[in-house]
Image (cartoon, rainbow, N blue to C red; front, side, top):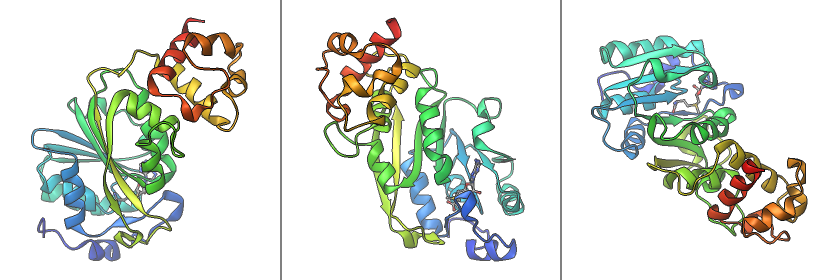
Length: 277
Ligand code: SAM
């Protein structure tokens, strides 16, 4: 055991934490596994950690047992709070629990930067949070993100140009981080088991983005390009409101190219072109 608290099955039964699909609840019950996920985040001693969606607290306990200086855990489901307060009592002064929506919380007032983010994310808000973290001002207030996703989403985050999973997430992740899949997990690792495999992705913030670009423009241009990924870029970029051909040519991209073929350097050049136009 990683701590002296009761096993998670007992915690869930005692607090009647039946998983709710609407909140994306698939819980991790194996504390050795949650400690292993916490270790993917690297040395936690002396580091504050933001956890989104702690639920009954399996990963929270992993993060605390692995030495995090402080964990800020944001949970939308009030049913989970009593279980989380028990963990807080076992780790005095190291766990702060906030009830609410992670999309509405700015952790800046409660954590010392740069913090690490570690979470078994609710699937319905996971990609939105990731895009926000990747497009904030740089350098960011976090040093790394260690995040559980459905395996297919994880593959989209680390995808290379020219492959079927390459898209907006891969471009944004490669632009500002070193991203890798650290672990894959079968459905049985969770309770209840989801339909698909899952994977833990580790994204380490780069000191500087790989190429200059405005995040809002890069995000917009890439979203338009991949929004209609089978079309040539001269057609898929039209909704951005300017004739795409000259901007594509200035970025070194043939107007007949499809989004899948464009590497990071040229996406950034295109975003700079749109921003200047
Ligand atoms: N971390 C726990 C674990 O690994 O067992 C639970 C993971 S479960 C996949 C996702 C958790 O996120 C649930 O506890 C759910 O209630 C919570 N959640 C869902 N939407 C949320 C939101 N917008 N903000 C904060 N927490 C949310």
